[in-house]
Image 1 (tube, rainbow, N blue to C red):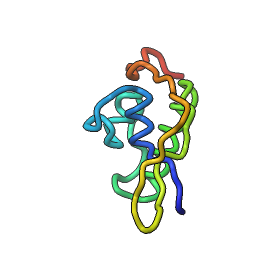
Image 2: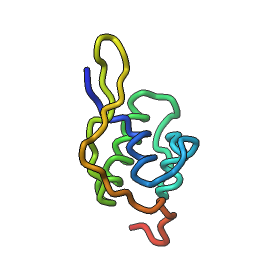
Image 3: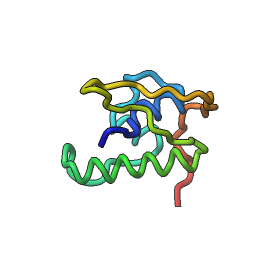
Image 4: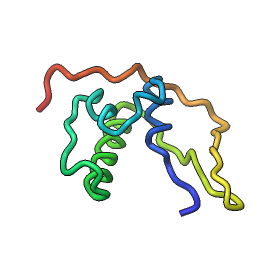
Length: 96
């Protein structure tokens, strides 16, 4: 892969939270979710990241490629269109 979405960057920018609040378990907790599976399992981490991405889309986030490799160097991809953010996630009161 030469281009991808860094969900931590997208989460931080969208919900306007500092990088210290973009660890997987903290992101899940802030969205009112528990970690499913075994920590540091590639498959379980991926499933939990997907759950975060789905929630972000439901909250109105326009997920876009934000990192790429060019000439062997990691580069941030900036968007020419500014994105509107959302307020920081709140613990839901009711969850079905």
